Image 1: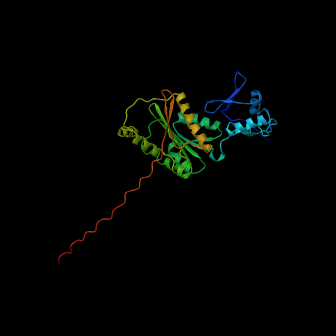
Image 2: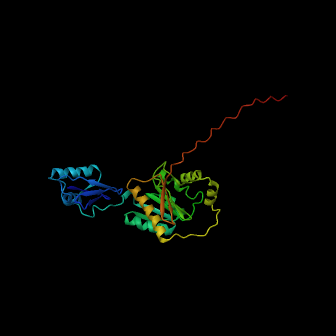
Image 3: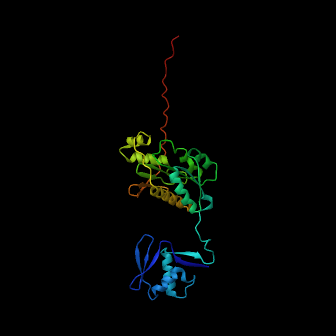
Length: 288
C-alpha cells in the first residue's frame, strides 16, 4: 500500500492565526487556502497520519493539489525502514581515489557513509586500474597547480565509460572541475583552454601551471579539506543518481569558504588545415 507525505525539503508551517503555509525547497513561503478543512487535519494528513484513501472530498482535493505542485512523494507502507534507506547504485559503487591523502581521506569516509566503495590507488596506477575494469569513476585530488600533461591520460576515461572527477589547488583557490561522464563532456584539457582564453594574463597563468613560480607552502586546514571533500562527494552522488553536473566549474576561496560556480563548455576539436597539392612545374628537358 502507498501513502503520500511531504517531499524532502518541503515544510508545512502552522501560522499563528490558525492557517498554514508551505515552505518550498527553494525557501519560499506560500499561503495555503484550506477552505473548510482544518489546517491541523491537513498537516496530520501530509505527515502520514492516514492511508492512501481520503473520505473527505475537500481534503483529497488539497492532497492532489500538493501532488501536482511536486510537494509530495509516495512511499510504501508495508516495507521495513531499512528497505526505504537510500543506497548507492550497485553498478557505480567502486570509486578510485588518488592524489593528496589529506583530501582523499575525508572523501573516502563520506563515500563509505553513502554506501559507495572507495578505493585508494597511486597516481601512476589509476588509469590502468580504471581501464582494467570494475571502477565506475576516478577522482584525482591534486593539492597544487596541475602541470601540463598530468591529466592527459585520465581525460580519455569518459570515452571508456568511466566517470572522471578532479580538483586542484592554486594558492587559496581550489578548482573543482565538472565530472566527465561520457564522450564529449568537459575534460581537464577543455578547462585549461577555457581558462587561458578567458584571461589577458594567459602567458603568466601558463607559466604558473608549468611550475615557474616561487611561493610559500600553504597547508589547507581540516575545515578546508572537509569542505572540498563534501563538494566532491555531492558531485559523485549526483552522478550516481543519474544527474551529474557535467558543465559546472566550481571555485572555492578557502579564505572565506566562498563558493562560486561557472558554466564551462567543451572545446571543439579543430579540423586540420587541408594539405594543398604541390604545383606541378614543367622542367626543361636537358640538352643532350
